Amino acid sequence: MILRAFMKAFFDRGLVWFRRDLRAHDHAALYHALRQCRQVWCVFVFDQEILDTLPRSDRRVDFIHASVQELDGRLRTLAPPGSDGQAGLIVLHDAARTAIPALAEALGVQAVFANHDDEPQALMRDAEVHAALQARGCAWHSFKDHCIFERDELLTQGGTPFSVFTPYKNAWLRKVDAFYLGSYPVQRHARALAARPTAYQQEAPSLQALGFSPSNLASLKIPTGVRGGEALFAEFFERMDRYHEAREFPAVKGPSYLGVHLRFGTVSIRQLASVAYQRMLQGDAGASTWLSELIWRDFYFQILAHHPHVVRSSFKPAYDAIQWERGPGADALFQAWCEGRTGYPLVDAAMAQINQTGYMHNRLRMVVASFLCKDLGLDWRWGERYFAEKLNDFDLAANNGGWQWASSSGCDAQPYFRIFNPVLQSEKFDPEGRFIRRYLPQLAALPTKSLHAPWKASAMVLATAGVQLGDNYPHPLVQHDLARQRTLERYAVVSSASPAQAPRARSGGS
Image 1 (cartoon, helix red, strand yellow):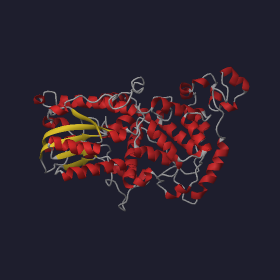
Image 2 (tube, one colour):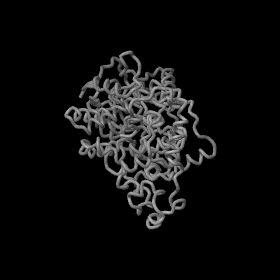
Image 3 (cartoon, rainbow, N blue to C red):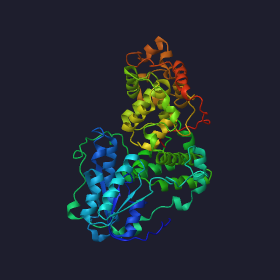
Image 4 (spheres, rainbow, N blue to C red):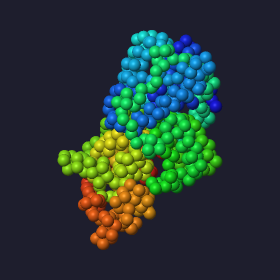
């Protein structure tokens, strides 16, 4: 363990604001608050301004709700005996930008501690909170916590942000050491956790009180909280050495499935990266590949921090000149893509997976994104927004980076002329059709050689399998070869730009 830098200022009372960091161990803001304050309270806000934008049944809200309850219990366990079990989490349902300054004033704290969040809306919210605290004479301290390197910590030799992954990764590996991978020893200072005042000892609001109904999170058996993250990582640890091979096949248990835990901080990125790094040094190919995925995560965070325009525009401005399909026809194509009615089984099975579970395999994220942009000719921002609504592990930086990679408009993206053939992708990465059959049971009886492109099957084969094209399974929306040609014409406005280097398999999941 590494003891972090000593801070000179001390406070009588402090408040820790939990956001995307729902754990009580190896937590930067909590550690610094406990070291710097005689008494520390902890708060989580179910932010009305965020919740009001979500559907009324949302797996992410369920996940957060369960994880907040576990965090409350862990803080109570950490607290000294004198707190009488009341040193748990203050949980509010309010607008965070006004609730945090009001709570700080009510508790009489001299400082609020939180971890960085570099998403543009979060930065605006935090600036408003900071200003309100400052007006009350209360300090604001924030820390890096959800990545290994952030903001300006890794720059090119010219002092500029990296925009190509491989040099970034090499710089990351050169700089990383025990300090950056070390854990914050929170428990050592937990005696500063204070009992909550009586007015704040109420239980966390129920899902119903928040305005939500339960989702299918429980029936999907998605583990929540720190316990869930620990269990998933322990299971993945045993098969990490095969990750580089198994991760490509959606019917195989290859990924870590830790995306949602990384998103909401129920695992520590330092602990995960430390394990992967040590195993990489021992020659573990799977760990090396998984560590690269974690480094991609850092890479996209720093892209968002340095280039916030990517939220609405292409990283490469020339790509905003592309004329995407528009009008009722485009809307119908998009709706068919969303609902998994494209007529390409691998694409449709992938969309069924995200719609039913909130998860999509990493390889499939690339396949369906390429299909939307380069087969249907639709704006990548449409797909990005749909993933933002559906993905349990939605993270703005990674989601935006993955979609811009697929559309060739992002940093270090695949060349515009690289267009995934959905049938070839299906034959290569779901060769036995196990994944397709799982999510498209209406095609389950088709022989494997016909499963990847049912429209090529004979009438007898289709009839024997009970498949009626245009009835219980659609005809293809587009012919891939013709769509590919239209895409090359569409991208002609940027064809003069130097093509990117050979692409790497890339998306938002780990």
